[in-house]
Image (cartoon, rainbow, N blue to C red; front, side, top):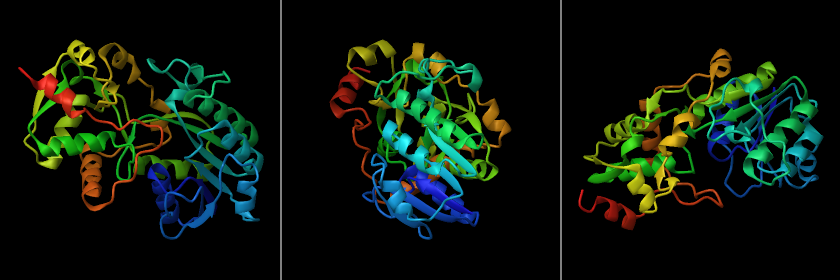
Length: 326
């Protein structure tokens, strides 16, 4: 079938293209054309999603039957896609848990029991919720909204897991959050999510799904231990109390990637993924994801960080201050 990937040259979109090609689809990607070419075998269409004339011009009569949308960031992008792609047989849209009005901190139960944002704020979560509404109205029952959680794996430009791998590979004493090591977290490999998204579009599956790894599949400390095993480093964890981290200026999620303070982490990771499992979203072993990500990091040029995102990782001066005397 003719399958259009909105996105397709970066992280998740790149894996979606690969999955769709493997399943025999005729694949085209629609991007701004500034982040490189899609995987070989896909047709590259270029244009700015925020321009209402761009997508029709790029398609130029080529009519997709299926869509996987990995790149919608603005209300205009959603409105423009809805105006053109309403008649497709399956549309899998990558939304975010941020579309929920009460997350974080959560917890998040079954999808139909949780309110999403309904405001006009030009912010990430409200924009995703707006996109869900307008695209669902245009596409109808064949519209699936995948509210993604933490996605990791090869080609990840956000560099959260990547920073930990790089830092742990250098070895030595490493600051870790004392209260955070037992914190349950969950991740989904972009490749598993990509295969599932293509399958949902093929089926014309509709509805909302919390598309993330199962709750409690590992802990923060368990993830760091896997990173140490994979990189072969001699890293030594130096647990630092949360109050000391905060007092020293350590920013959760940014300076210590994936770390949330205890009060927020207690509920933020608690997301019901029952429907995702029922619809066949599987998650490969964490060890495989980490090992493949590390292997990719050794052999590939690192993609640039997405714009408007702070560089993750603990600044050297903060690390030295926290390690002093411990």
